Image (tube, rainbow, N blue to C red; front, side, top):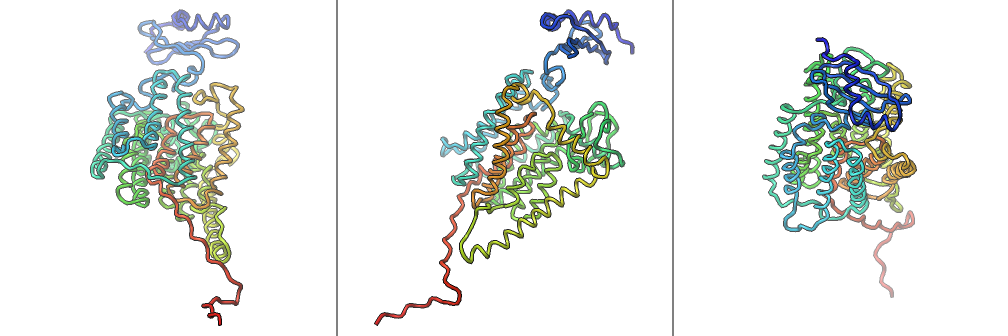
Length: 524
Protein backbone atom coordinates (compact mmCIF):
# COMPACT_ATOMS: atom_id res chain seq x y z
CA UNK A 1 0.00 0.00 0.00
CA UNK A 2 1.42 3.38 -1.03
CA UNK A 3 2.13 5.89 1.76
CA UNK A 4 -0.22 8.81 2.23
CA UNK A 5 2.56 11.39 2.72
CA UNK A 6 5.36 12.23 0.35
CA UNK A 7 8.92 12.19 1.60
CA UNK A 8 9.12 16.00 1.47
CA UNK A 9 5.86 16.39 3.40
CA UNK A 10 7.02 13.95 6.11
CA UNK A 11 10.23 15.95 6.56
CA UNK A 12 8.27 19.22 6.84
CA UNK A 13 6.04 17.72 9.54
CA UNK A 14 9.08 16.44 11.41
CA UNK A 15 10.89 19.80 11.25
CA UNK A 16 8.06 21.34 13.26
CA UNK A 17 8.86 19.14 16.28
CA UNK A 18 10.29 21.16 19.24
CA UNK A 19 13.22 18.78 19.64
CA UNK A 20 14.31 19.46 16.06
CA UNK A 21 14.21 23.20 16.73
CA UNK A 22 16.21 22.69 19.93
CA UNK A 23 18.92 20.69 18.17
CA UNK A 24 19.01 23.14 15.24
CA UNK A 25 19.62 25.97 17.68
CA UNK A 26 22.42 23.96 19.26
CA UNK A 27 24.14 22.58 16.14
CA UNK A 28 23.02 24.86 13.32
CA UNK A 29 21.65 23.56 10.05
CA UNK A 30 20.36 19.96 10.16
CA UNK A 31 20.27 17.73 7.09
CA UNK A 32 17.33 15.32 6.88
CA UNK A 33 16.53 11.92 5.42
CA UNK A 34 13.24 10.03 5.54
CA UNK A 35 12.31 6.39 5.24
CA UNK A 36 8.79 5.04 4.77
CA UNK A 37 7.73 2.26 7.15
CA UNK A 38 4.37 0.55 7.65
CA UNK A 39 2.03 3.32 8.78
CA UNK A 40 4.84 5.77 9.60
CA UNK A 41 7.79 7.75 8.31
CA UNK A 42 11.12 7.73 10.14
CA UNK A 43 12.82 11.09 9.67
CA UNK A 44 16.44 11.43 10.78
CA UNK A 45 18.22 14.77 11.25
CA UNK A 46 22.03 15.04 11.13
CA UNK A 47 24.65 17.60 12.07
CA UNK A 48 28.40 17.14 11.61
CA UNK A 49 27.82 13.59 10.39
CA UNK A 50 26.02 12.52 13.59
CA UNK A 51 22.32 11.82 13.96
CA UNK A 52 20.89 14.37 16.39
CA UNK A 53 17.12 13.83 16.21
CA UNK A 54 14.88 10.97 15.10
CA UNK A 55 11.22 11.74 14.50
CA UNK A 56 8.45 9.23 13.82
CA UNK A 57 5.64 10.75 11.75
CA UNK A 58 2.22 9.10 11.48
CA UNK A 59 1.50 8.61 7.79
CA UNK A 60 -2.28 8.77 8.06
CA UNK A 61 -2.62 11.86 10.26
CA UNK A 62 0.58 13.74 9.33
CA UNK A 63 1.42 14.24 13.02
CA UNK A 64 4.48 13.45 15.07
CA UNK A 65 4.10 10.23 17.06
CA UNK A 66 7.42 10.43 18.91
CA UNK A 67 10.81 12.09 18.73
CA UNK A 68 14.16 11.17 20.28
CA UNK A 69 17.58 12.64 20.85
CA UNK A 70 20.87 11.44 22.34
CA UNK A 71 21.28 7.77 23.17
CA UNK A 72 17.54 7.18 22.76
CA UNK A 73 18.06 7.36 19.00
CA UNK A 74 20.28 4.29 18.87
CA UNK A 75 18.83 2.47 21.88
CA UNK A 76 15.13 1.73 21.46
CA UNK A 77 15.15 -0.03 24.84
CA UNK A 78 15.79 3.40 26.41
CA UNK A 79 12.50 4.76 25.08
CA UNK A 80 10.19 3.21 27.66
CA UNK A 81 7.98 1.33 25.22
CA UNK A 82 5.37 -0.50 27.34
CA UNK A 83 5.62 -3.92 25.65
CA UNK A 84 9.40 -4.11 25.47
CA UNK A 85 10.25 -5.87 28.75
CA UNK A 86 7.98 -7.50 31.28
CA UNK A 87 4.66 -6.64 29.61
CA UNK A 88 1.82 -7.06 32.15
CA UNK A 89 4.32 -7.77 34.92
CA UNK A 90 5.10 -4.03 34.96
CA UNK A 91 1.52 -3.17 35.84
CA UNK A 92 1.32 -1.98 39.47
CA UNK A 93 -1.55 -4.39 40.18
CA UNK A 94 0.80 -7.28 39.27
CA UNK A 95 4.23 -6.04 40.41
CA UNK A 96 3.27 -4.69 43.82
CA UNK A 97 1.34 -7.78 45.03
CA UNK A 98 4.21 -9.98 43.82
CA UNK A 99 6.74 -7.87 45.73
CA UNK A 100 4.53 -7.98 48.85
CA UNK A 101 4.22 -11.77 48.64
CA UNK A 102 8.00 -12.07 48.34
CA UNK A 103 8.63 -9.86 51.38
CA UNK A 104 5.82 -11.04 53.65
CA UNK A 105 6.22 -14.69 52.77
CA UNK A 106 9.90 -14.63 53.80
CA UNK A 107 9.44 -12.38 56.84
CA UNK A 108 10.15 -13.56 60.37
CA UNK A 109 7.41 -11.93 62.44
CA UNK A 110 8.91 -13.16 65.71
CA UNK A 111 12.11 -11.12 65.17
CA UNK A 112 11.25 -8.22 62.94
CA UNK A 113 14.46 -6.18 63.23
CA UNK A 114 16.84 -8.52 61.49
CA UNK A 115 19.30 -7.57 58.79
CA UNK A 116 18.05 -10.29 56.44
CA UNK A 117 14.79 -8.38 56.21
CA UNK A 118 16.75 -5.36 55.02
CA UNK A 119 18.36 -7.66 52.46
CA UNK A 120 14.91 -8.53 51.10
CA UNK A 121 13.98 -4.86 50.85
CA UNK A 122 17.21 -4.07 49.02
CA UNK A 123 16.53 -6.88 46.54
CA UNK A 124 13.12 -5.33 45.89
CA UNK A 125 14.58 -1.80 45.63
CA UNK A 126 15.74 -2.48 42.07
CA UNK A 127 12.08 -1.83 41.31
CA UNK A 128 12.57 1.88 42.03
CA UNK A 129 15.15 2.01 39.25
CA UNK A 130 12.78 0.06 36.98
CA UNK A 131 10.05 2.67 37.45
CA UNK A 132 12.28 5.34 35.93
CA UNK A 133 13.41 2.94 33.19
CA UNK A 134 9.79 2.34 32.19
CA UNK A 135 9.31 6.12 32.11
CA UNK A 136 12.22 6.41 29.60
CA UNK A 137 14.32 8.27 32.17
CA UNK A 138 17.47 6.16 32.19
CA UNK A 139 19.49 9.14 33.35
CA UNK A 140 17.90 8.38 36.73
CA UNK A 141 17.20 4.64 36.44
CA UNK A 142 20.81 3.65 35.74
CA UNK A 143 22.44 5.34 38.78
CA UNK A 144 19.66 4.01 41.04
CA UNK A 145 20.66 0.42 40.25
CA UNK A 146 24.13 0.77 41.78
CA UNK A 147 23.36 1.30 45.50
CA UNK A 148 21.52 -2.06 45.75
CA UNK A 149 24.37 -3.78 43.89
CA UNK A 150 26.99 -2.28 46.22
CA UNK A 151 24.97 -3.19 49.32
CA UNK A 152 24.45 -6.77 48.15
CA UNK A 153 28.14 -7.08 47.34
CA UNK A 154 29.01 -6.03 50.88
CA UNK A 155 26.45 -8.41 52.41
CA UNK A 156 27.60 -11.37 50.32
CA UNK A 157 31.20 -10.69 51.32
CA UNK A 158 30.17 -10.55 54.98
CA UNK A 159 28.26 -13.82 54.71
CA UNK A 160 30.95 -15.47 52.63
CA UNK A 161 33.88 -14.55 54.85
CA UNK A 162 32.19 -14.65 58.26
CA UNK A 163 29.82 -17.54 57.65
CA UNK A 164 27.93 -16.92 60.87
CA UNK A 165 24.36 -16.12 61.74
CA UNK A 166 20.89 -17.62 61.93
CA UNK A 167 19.91 -16.97 58.35
CA UNK A 168 16.50 -16.17 56.91
CA UNK A 169 13.81 -17.90 58.94
CA UNK A 170 10.30 -17.13 57.63
CA UNK A 171 7.39 -17.46 60.02
CA UNK A 172 5.10 -18.91 57.35
CA UNK A 173 4.46 -22.65 57.60
CA UNK A 174 6.19 -24.86 55.05
CA UNK A 175 2.88 -25.98 53.54
CA UNK A 176 1.83 -22.38 52.91
CA UNK A 177 5.13 -21.59 51.20
CA UNK A 178 4.92 -24.75 49.10
CA UNK A 179 1.34 -24.06 47.98
CA UNK A 180 2.13 -20.39 47.37
CA UNK A 181 5.25 -21.24 45.39
CA UNK A 182 3.36 -23.75 43.22
CA UNK A 183 0.61 -21.20 42.56
CA UNK A 184 3.17 -18.52 41.64
CA UNK A 185 4.96 -20.86 39.24
CA UNK A 186 1.65 -21.60 37.52
CA UNK A 187 0.87 -17.89 37.38
CA UNK A 188 4.27 -17.10 35.86
CA UNK A 189 3.90 -19.73 33.16
CA UNK A 190 0.34 -18.66 32.33
CA UNK A 191 1.41 -15.00 32.14
CA UNK A 192 4.33 -15.96 29.89
CA UNK A 193 2.05 -17.80 27.47
CA UNK A 194 -0.74 -15.21 27.53
CA UNK A 195 1.22 -11.96 27.56
CA UNK A 196 4.97 -11.85 27.07
CA UNK A 197 7.39 -10.92 24.33
CA UNK A 198 10.66 -12.35 23.11
CA UNK A 199 13.51 -9.85 23.19
CA UNK A 200 16.50 -10.03 20.87
CA UNK A 201 18.36 -12.27 23.35
CA UNK A 202 15.82 -15.10 23.14
CA UNK A 203 15.42 -14.55 19.41
CA UNK A 204 19.18 -14.98 19.02
CA UNK A 205 19.07 -18.33 20.82
CA UNK A 206 16.40 -19.66 18.45
CA UNK A 207 18.24 -18.43 15.35
CA UNK A 208 21.53 -19.95 16.52
CA UNK A 209 19.85 -23.28 17.26
CA UNK A 210 18.28 -23.28 13.80
CA UNK A 211 21.66 -22.51 12.20
CA UNK A 212 23.37 -25.37 14.05
CA UNK A 213 20.73 -27.94 13.12
CA UNK A 214 20.94 -26.85 9.47
CA UNK A 215 24.74 -26.78 9.32
CA UNK A 216 24.92 -22.99 8.94
CA UNK A 217 27.49 -20.60 10.36
CA UNK A 218 26.54 -19.12 13.73
CA UNK A 219 29.26 -16.46 14.16
CA UNK A 220 30.36 -13.90 11.63
CA UNK A 221 29.31 -10.79 9.76
CA UNK A 222 25.84 -11.26 8.23
CA UNK A 223 25.45 -14.68 9.88
CA UNK A 224 22.26 -13.44 11.54
CA UNK A 225 19.29 -11.71 9.89
CA UNK A 226 19.08 -7.93 9.67
CA UNK A 227 16.50 -7.66 12.47
CA UNK A 228 19.02 -9.20 14.93
CA UNK A 229 22.48 -8.61 13.42
CA UNK A 230 24.38 -8.96 16.70
CA UNK A 231 22.68 -12.12 17.90
CA UNK A 232 25.95 -14.05 17.57
CA UNK A 233 27.57 -12.47 20.64
CA UNK A 234 27.01 -15.51 22.89
CA UNK A 235 28.96 -18.70 23.48
CA UNK A 236 28.14 -22.04 21.82
CA UNK A 237 26.26 -23.58 24.72
CA UNK A 238 23.70 -20.77 24.62
CA UNK A 239 22.63 -21.95 21.16
CA UNK A 240 22.94 -25.66 22.00
CA UNK A 241 20.53 -25.14 24.89
CA UNK A 242 17.83 -23.93 22.50
CA UNK A 243 18.15 -26.84 20.04
CA UNK A 244 15.60 -29.20 21.67
CA UNK A 245 12.97 -26.48 21.77
CA UNK A 246 13.67 -25.28 18.22
CA UNK A 247 13.39 -28.84 16.91
CA UNK A 248 9.96 -29.28 18.46
CA UNK A 249 8.77 -25.70 17.74
CA UNK A 250 10.70 -24.71 14.58
CA UNK A 251 11.67 -21.17 13.68
CA UNK A 252 9.90 -19.85 10.60
CA UNK A 253 12.50 -17.27 9.61
CA UNK A 254 10.84 -14.22 11.19
CA UNK A 255 10.62 -12.45 14.54
CA UNK A 256 7.16 -13.78 15.25
CA UNK A 257 5.79 -15.25 18.47
CA UNK A 258 8.84 -17.58 18.66
CA UNK A 259 7.28 -20.41 20.70
CA UNK A 260 10.67 -22.13 21.00
CA UNK A 261 12.00 -19.13 22.95
CA UNK A 262 8.99 -19.25 25.29
CA UNK A 263 9.43 -22.97 25.88
CA UNK A 264 13.15 -22.58 26.54
CA UNK A 265 12.65 -19.71 28.99
CA UNK A 266 9.99 -21.66 30.91
CA UNK A 267 12.27 -24.72 31.07
CA UNK A 268 15.25 -22.67 32.31
CA UNK A 269 13.03 -21.10 34.97
CA UNK A 270 11.68 -24.44 36.22
CA UNK A 271 15.17 -25.98 36.14
CA UNK A 272 16.39 -23.20 38.43
CA UNK A 273 13.51 -23.73 40.87
CA UNK A 274 14.19 -27.47 40.92
CA UNK A 275 17.87 -26.83 41.57
CA UNK A 276 17.11 -24.45 44.42
CA UNK A 277 14.76 -26.98 46.01
CA UNK A 278 17.40 -29.72 45.87
CA UNK A 279 20.07 -27.31 47.11
CA UNK A 280 17.88 -26.24 50.02
CA UNK A 281 17.27 -29.85 51.01
CA UNK A 282 21.03 -30.39 51.09
CA UNK A 283 21.53 -27.32 53.24
CA UNK A 284 18.87 -27.97 55.85
CA UNK A 285 16.03 -30.20 54.76
CA UNK A 286 12.79 -29.90 52.83
CA UNK A 287 11.75 -26.63 54.49
CA UNK A 288 14.84 -24.80 53.23
CA UNK A 289 14.25 -26.23 49.76
CA UNK A 290 10.68 -24.92 49.79
CA UNK A 291 11.87 -21.50 51.02
CA UNK A 292 14.40 -21.18 48.20
CA UNK A 293 11.89 -22.29 45.57
CA UNK A 294 9.28 -19.87 46.92
CA UNK A 295 11.78 -17.00 46.91
CA UNK A 296 12.56 -17.55 43.23
CA UNK A 297 8.89 -17.89 42.26
CA UNK A 298 7.87 -14.75 44.15
CA UNK A 299 10.76 -12.44 43.26
CA UNK A 300 9.63 -9.99 40.54
CA UNK A 301 12.94 -9.79 38.72
CA UNK A 302 13.19 -13.53 38.10
CA UNK A 303 9.74 -13.24 36.52
CA UNK A 304 11.01 -10.20 34.61
CA UNK A 305 13.57 -12.43 32.90
CA UNK A 306 10.91 -15.04 32.20
CA UNK A 307 8.52 -12.45 30.76
CA UNK A 308 11.32 -11.21 28.49
CA UNK A 309 12.08 -14.79 27.40
CA UNK A 310 15.80 -14.14 27.69
CA UNK A 311 18.63 -16.62 28.25
CA UNK A 312 19.61 -15.26 31.67
CA UNK A 313 17.86 -17.93 33.70
CA UNK A 314 19.95 -20.50 31.78
CA UNK A 315 22.97 -19.07 33.63
CA UNK A 316 21.07 -19.12 36.91
CA UNK A 317 20.09 -22.77 36.43
CA UNK A 318 23.62 -23.88 35.58
CA UNK A 319 25.15 -22.11 38.58
CA UNK A 320 22.53 -23.34 41.04
CA UNK A 321 22.98 -26.92 39.88
CA UNK A 322 26.75 -26.46 40.09
CA UNK A 323 26.22 -25.73 43.79
CA UNK A 324 24.04 -28.82 44.12
CA UNK A 325 26.94 -30.97 42.88
CA UNK A 326 29.61 -28.80 44.51
CA UNK A 327 31.15 -31.78 46.30
CA UNK A 328 32.10 -33.25 42.91
CA UNK A 329 34.98 -31.38 41.20
CA UNK A 330 34.15 -33.01 37.86
CA UNK A 331 30.46 -32.07 37.91
CA UNK A 332 30.91 -28.49 39.12
CA UNK A 333 33.75 -28.01 36.61
CA UNK A 334 31.57 -29.23 33.74
CA UNK A 335 28.60 -27.04 34.66
CA UNK A 336 30.80 -23.98 35.12
CA UNK A 337 32.33 -24.59 31.68
CA UNK A 338 28.84 -24.68 30.13
CA UNK A 339 27.83 -21.46 31.92
CA UNK A 340 31.06 -19.78 30.82
CA UNK A 341 30.49 -20.65 27.18
CA UNK A 342 26.89 -19.51 27.27
CA UNK A 343 27.55 -16.02 28.67
CA UNK A 344 31.17 -15.39 29.58
CA UNK A 345 30.88 -13.70 33.01
CA UNK A 346 30.80 -17.00 34.99
CA UNK A 347 34.48 -17.48 34.08
CA UNK A 348 35.21 -15.26 37.11
CA UNK A 349 34.00 -18.11 39.34
CA UNK A 350 36.68 -20.55 38.16
CA UNK A 351 39.13 -19.95 41.06
CA UNK A 352 36.39 -20.38 43.68
CA UNK A 353 34.97 -23.49 42.05
CA UNK A 354 38.44 -24.94 41.51
CA UNK A 355 39.23 -25.12 45.24
CA UNK A 356 35.71 -26.00 46.39
CA UNK A 357 35.12 -25.99 50.14
CA UNK A 358 38.82 -25.73 51.10
CA UNK A 359 40.73 -22.52 50.47
CA UNK A 360 44.34 -22.69 49.37
CA UNK A 361 45.46 -21.52 52.82
CA UNK A 362 43.76 -24.41 54.56
CA UNK A 363 46.79 -26.13 56.03
CA UNK A 364 47.24 -28.77 58.71
CA UNK A 365 50.32 -29.90 60.53
CA UNK A 366 52.29 -33.08 60.37
CA UNK A 367 50.59 -36.26 59.24
CA UNK A 368 47.25 -34.48 58.64
CA UNK A 369 48.85 -32.27 55.97
CA UNK A 370 50.19 -35.32 54.16
CA UNK A 371 46.79 -37.02 54.33
CA UNK A 372 45.02 -33.98 52.79
CA UNK A 373 47.59 -33.16 50.11
CA UNK A 374 46.71 -35.95 47.68
CA UNK A 375 42.89 -35.53 47.85
CA UNK A 376 43.23 -31.79 47.28
CA UNK A 377 45.59 -32.34 44.36
CA UNK A 378 43.22 -34.84 42.81
CA UNK A 379 40.25 -32.49 43.27
CA UNK A 380 42.07 -29.64 41.53
CA UNK A 381 43.15 -31.97 38.75
CA UNK A 382 39.63 -33.36 38.25
CA UNK A 383 38.11 -29.87 38.22
CA UNK A 384 40.70 -28.65 35.72
CA UNK A 385 40.16 -31.61 33.43
CA UNK A 386 36.38 -31.19 33.52
CA UNK A 387 36.45 -27.40 33.16
CA UNK A 388 39.07 -27.19 30.41
CA UNK A 389 37.64 -30.25 28.68
CA UNK A 390 34.16 -28.72 28.74
CA UNK A 391 35.48 -25.46 27.28
CA UNK A 392 37.37 -27.35 24.56
CA UNK A 393 34.31 -29.40 23.65
CA UNK A 394 32.11 -26.31 23.40
CA UNK A 395 34.74 -24.48 21.33
CA UNK A 396 35.01 -27.30 18.78
CA UNK A 397 32.19 -25.88 16.62
CA UNK A 398 33.47 -22.28 16.37
CA UNK A 399 37.01 -23.60 15.89
CA UNK A 400 35.88 -25.43 12.75
CA UNK A 401 33.60 -22.67 11.50
CA UNK A 402 34.27 -19.71 11.39
CA UNK A 403 37.54 -20.00 13.37
CA UNK A 404 38.48 -18.86 16.85
CA UNK A 405 39.64 -15.42 15.70
CA UNK A 406 36.25 -14.57 14.21
CA UNK A 407 34.47 -16.18 17.16
CA UNK A 408 36.44 -14.06 19.63
CA UNK A 409 35.83 -10.91 17.59
CA UNK A 410 32.08 -11.49 17.39
CA UNK A 411 31.63 -12.48 21.04
CA UNK A 412 34.14 -11.45 23.70
CA UNK A 413 35.68 -8.49 21.90
CA UNK A 414 32.36 -7.09 20.69
CA UNK A 415 31.03 -7.16 24.25
CA UNK A 416 34.17 -5.61 25.71
CA UNK A 417 34.16 -2.83 23.11
CA UNK A 418 30.45 -2.01 23.25
CA UNK A 419 29.31 1.40 24.41
CA UNK A 420 26.06 1.53 26.32
CA UNK A 421 24.07 4.14 28.24
CA UNK A 422 22.89 1.38 30.57
CA UNK A 423 25.74 1.83 33.01
CA UNK A 424 27.16 4.81 34.82
CA UNK A 425 30.38 4.23 32.85
CA UNK A 426 28.51 4.66 29.58
CA UNK A 427 26.72 7.78 30.80
CA UNK A 428 29.63 9.49 32.52
CA UNK A 429 32.99 8.91 30.85
CA UNK A 430 34.88 10.89 33.49
CA UNK A 431 34.39 7.90 35.83
CA UNK A 432 36.61 5.65 33.74
CA UNK A 433 39.26 5.68 36.49
CA UNK A 434 36.72 4.34 39.00
CA UNK A 435 35.66 1.62 36.57
CA UNK A 436 39.31 0.60 36.22
CA UNK A 437 39.67 0.42 40.01
CA UNK A 438 36.55 -1.75 40.26
CA UNK A 439 37.83 -4.05 37.53
CA UNK A 440 40.99 -4.56 39.56
CA UNK A 441 38.87 -5.21 42.64
CA UNK A 442 36.73 -7.77 40.79
CA UNK A 443 39.80 -9.65 39.55
CA UNK A 444 41.38 -9.51 42.99
CA UNK A 445 38.18 -10.76 44.65
CA UNK A 446 37.84 -13.65 42.18
CA UNK A 447 41.37 -14.76 43.13
CA UNK A 448 41.06 -14.01 46.84
CA UNK A 449 38.07 -16.29 47.38
CA UNK A 450 40.21 -19.20 46.22
CA UNK A 451 42.52 -18.54 49.17
CA UNK A 452 40.34 -17.41 52.06
CA UNK A 453 38.41 -18.33 54.05
CA UNK A 454 40.39 -21.48 54.72
CA UNK A 455 37.21 -23.48 55.18
CA UNK A 456 33.90 -22.50 53.64
CA UNK A 457 30.51 -24.14 54.00
CA UNK A 458 28.30 -24.55 50.95
CA UNK A 459 26.21 -21.45 51.87
CA UNK A 460 29.45 -19.48 52.20
CA UNK A 461 30.56 -20.70 48.76
CA UNK A 462 27.17 -19.61 47.37
CA UNK A 463 27.52 -16.15 48.92
CA UNK A 464 31.10 -15.76 47.65
CA UNK A 465 30.00 -16.78 44.15
CA UNK A 466 27.21 -14.18 44.29
CA UNK A 467 29.72 -11.55 45.45
CA UNK A 468 32.08 -12.29 42.55
CA UNK A 469 29.25 -12.06 40.00
CA UNK A 470 28.01 -8.78 41.49
CA UNK A 471 31.55 -7.37 41.40
CA UNK A 472 31.78 -8.29 37.71
CA UNK A 473 28.40 -6.70 37.01
CA UNK A 474 29.48 -3.49 38.72
CA UNK A 475 32.26 -3.11 36.14
CA UNK A 476 30.09 -3.94 33.11
CA UNK A 477 29.73 -1.36 30.36
CA UNK A 478 26.18 -2.61 29.85
CA UNK A 479 24.04 -3.64 32.85
CA UNK A 480 20.39 -4.57 32.93
CA UNK A 481 17.81 -6.00 35.33
CA UNK A 482 17.93 -9.34 33.50
CA UNK A 483 21.33 -9.96 35.09
CA UNK A 484 19.91 -10.03 38.63
CA UNK A 485 18.84 -13.71 38.36
CA UNK A 486 22.49 -14.67 37.78
CA UNK A 487 23.28 -14.04 41.43
CA UNK A 488 19.83 -14.09 43.05
CA UNK A 489 19.62 -17.85 43.65
CA UNK A 490 23.19 -17.94 44.97
CA UNK A 491 22.56 -14.99 47.28
CA UNK A 492 19.38 -16.54 48.68
CA UNK A 493 21.21 -19.82 49.33
CA UNK A 494 23.73 -17.88 51.40
CA UNK A 495 21.10 -15.87 53.26
CA UNK A 496 18.74 -18.73 54.02
CA UNK A 497 21.21 -21.18 55.52
CA UNK A 498 24.10 -19.19 56.97
CA UNK A 499 25.55 -21.96 59.15
CA UNK A 500 28.74 -21.29 61.06
CA UNK A 501 31.64 -23.42 59.93
CA UNK A 502 32.72 -25.54 62.88
CA UNK A 503 36.38 -25.01 63.75
CA UNK A 504 38.68 -27.92 63.05
CA UNK A 505 39.92 -29.80 66.10
CA UNK A 506 43.60 -29.20 66.70
CA UNK A 507 45.79 -31.89 65.11
CA UNK A 508 47.31 -34.48 67.39
CA UNK A 509 50.90 -33.73 68.29
CA UNK A 510 53.25 -35.88 66.25
CA UNK A 511 56.04 -37.92 67.84
CA UNK A 512 59.38 -38.95 66.37
CA UNK A 513 59.09 -41.89 64.01
CA UNK A 514 59.73 -45.25 65.63
CA UNK A 515 58.91 -44.10 69.14
CA UNK A 516 55.61 -44.82 70.83
CA UNK A 517 54.26 -43.13 73.86
CA UNK A 518 52.87 -45.47 76.46
CA UNK A 519 51.74 -44.99 80.01
CA UNK A 520 54.35 -43.41 82.20
CA UNK A 521 56.02 -45.62 84.69
CA UNK A 522 55.45 -44.49 88.23
CA UNK A 523 58.42 -42.85 89.79
CA UNK A 524 60.12 -44.81 92.47
